[in-house]
Length: 52
Image (cartoon, rainbow, N blue to C red; front, side):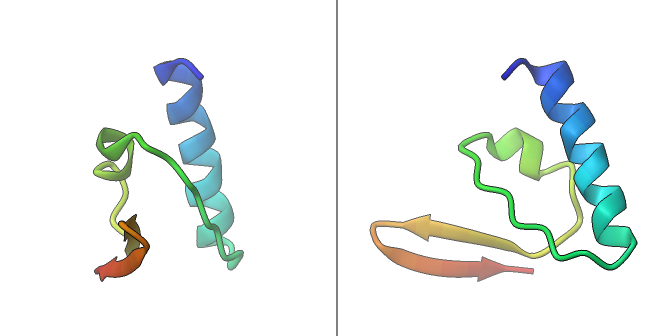
């Protein structure tokens, strides 16, 4: 998906989360994740790491 659409969807997910819905996003775009102040779960070589 192109970057403008990704940012639009991210804003929608942030709003849904603010309203109380849990949101899980799977992406390879780390720059997109840096725009969100939230817990990040990173799967690397079969291991899950939590970044608060």
